[in-house]
Length: 173
Length: 372
Image 1: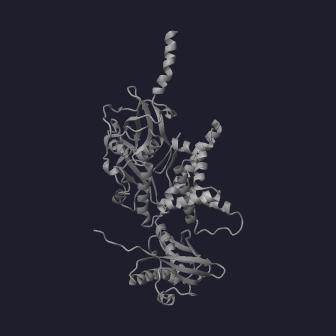
Image 2 (image 1 turned 180 degrees about the vertical axis):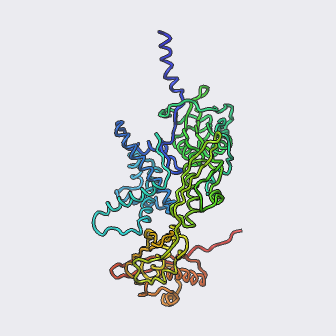
Image 3 (image 1 turned 90 degrees about the horizontal axis):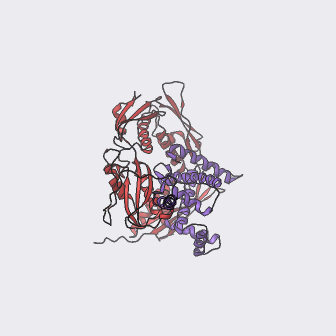
């Protein structure tokens, strides 16, 4: 009895001493690795979620991250770059559109779980994607009337489908 | 593909797949030996309680000697520093981008004799293809296929795809537009495989006829001059795309600034023998003329005199080539005044009037001083 109690007391310590996974690859896109921690960081601002909802969001977010990497690769091939100055301008634009000072914007971003650098990188990615989209659809005639948003979504889907077809993508468990 | 994987491959000769682990010896003394095999760990475990602990040792487990030595140089986590989540994430990404690894798992192992931890990168290397066999090639010699494949590279799917694309490109350049190349890998010895290519050449196509569909403003003869494809030459999609871009440039020189040229499907002609009709689909749009013409920035003297020297004239049909030539002319005029300028052509399109207002913005560049 005393021996069992001793073993039980030591078990948590042994568990603590076991090697733990600090990070691992959950998906690859050509030569890019998406890691478990990068995926978790993207989901962090959403707060605590139930298991079912979390799985759904993980799947959707992972797909978003895959698409972002495909676009980033294609944009790099096309030499479409977003400079630090472009990002800073965008930061000021977002702040002024929300009637905030830049300092207040950083505070609001922090409250939503974004560090400054993460937020800047997110803006850089969005700006690059916008340039990429404009470049890739420059020769397409835009609809004069109707839903431009629908047209843009359809064009984006078609472009992504082509990029996926030409890429090596692997999603791991 | 040769020279396309410079990160690590040049330094890594073909080596056995299993080798002892390697440790980061930078900074601190390295009395502990790294484990030679990966410790057991649960893939869904996480190191939440270990962030910030001192990293006593960094090891690469599962890679060959040469590879591990180079991989250790790429990680940014440092012995003696606190265990950092962002640094570990970057390490995993940096290790994977080296092309040679199929998998990377960062594992943290608490140490029994210290409050610190050991950071292990448990990796799995791709085998390398050291031999090649080719089947199905009839029109292209095996030596041509072999010259497109560099032996000794890791069998990473991205590398494999690039290698197959090289082979397909060799075929496409001589008119085989639909060549399929499949591959399989045959194990030879640990860490080495034979790359087996199976080629389905498909048909060879030549240009039998060229047609411009939709050209009205610009005559066929002028368009034809811009092409590199010609009747009798091998049909290649790459050349056809390049020709479409060249045709667009011709249209831009005729004020057709909203024009678009695409390559239609290459239909095989009735004469057979792989001759296809190359169709360029042209949407010309309206002809635009130059509206207001302005100069801003660096002063080159009276505008009237400068405009006289330019090829672009107000009310004349817009020409992109003329604008390009004028940019060079303006730079030359500035240099005669002892200045170096950057010239930016700023355009404003007026669709209703079918005019383009053009402003040449001249920005004086700082004087270049040579320092000794």
